[in-house]
Length: 228
Image 1 (cartoon, helix red, strand yellow):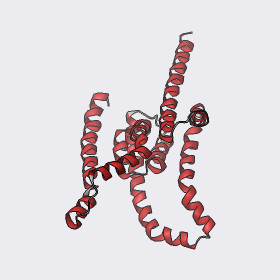
Image 2 (tube, rainbow, N blue to C red):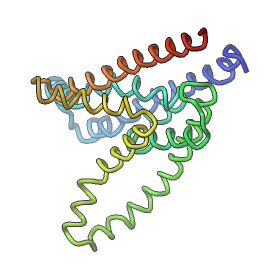
Image 3 (tube, rainbow, N blue to C red):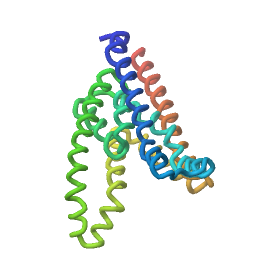
Image 4 (cartoon, rainbow, N blue to C red):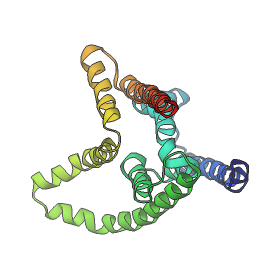
């Protein structure tokens, strides 16, 4: 299937469905606020709402730019729509998409990867729904039975452990980039006064930039070798 045909069969329907699905979800997320205002007359002033948004944007604003760009090569177009709608991207959707590509030996960024990553993410959404439902009823009860130290460990270290596993998964495949990806934020953290959101942007786009340079250098070396 050539790019033009794939664009007609895959990208256009995915964009249409994904765009309207996300917009609908965004609008529906305001329903609780609308209900509180219409039924109980409770609503913050514009200045209060703007301040609240500013606080959230300060904490998470960097992710508005970083996540869609840095995750796209693994998630693909449809996977990006699915992931941003269902959530748990870095600790669930991305690992599942990456593992789906790995076990099928599919190169990221290709047409095949679009389909494979979508299947992996879709499976993770279904599994996640079942798991979250069970966790809601069983997980809380189990944590109450654990000793305090073990319960605190689950609460505090589960997400870092998952993110560390994701990093390790890709570090084995791209060891040079793993060193760079860790080195940039560590270096900037101890040599500059950058805030956390600036460190995130610098680390992500710095790693992407260096990866591009290494990729071009490797291609140039391979072409020179083949010509010789």
